Length: 181
Image (cartoon, rainbow, N blue to C red):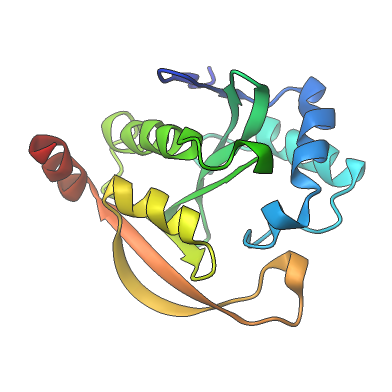
């Protein structure tokens, strides 16, 4: 059964085939995808169909992808995915018109808590481009700690090599953050 999560303002739920239109509308925006590692631009209906089918058929032990649904309906997506290295990676995006309202911080906190408390993950990893201060703030608020710097080439920006920051958060660091707050 899909692990639906609820926060004060959001529902994090499974992708449905009826999400195709809002998914394609919101993510086919260069401002949104230019800092995402694997999302193409332009984003086609076929890309959206592939993504929704992938999310619905991939075992939860490999990837859990939630729709971020807020007061405005479909608002973005957030994932916990295990790469070939076996490390759980947090990834997310939000529709541009909803930036700056705290929705992604709220969604990321719920998914991070789920990862540690329900999945019993020892560590969650993620990264962000240096040019994405909003994402860096989300991670900082959650207590993620910088573990390295490198370079990344987002799929939407082939040929560009951009500075990126890698982060991790352990279950103990998460618990420590909660006792301090």
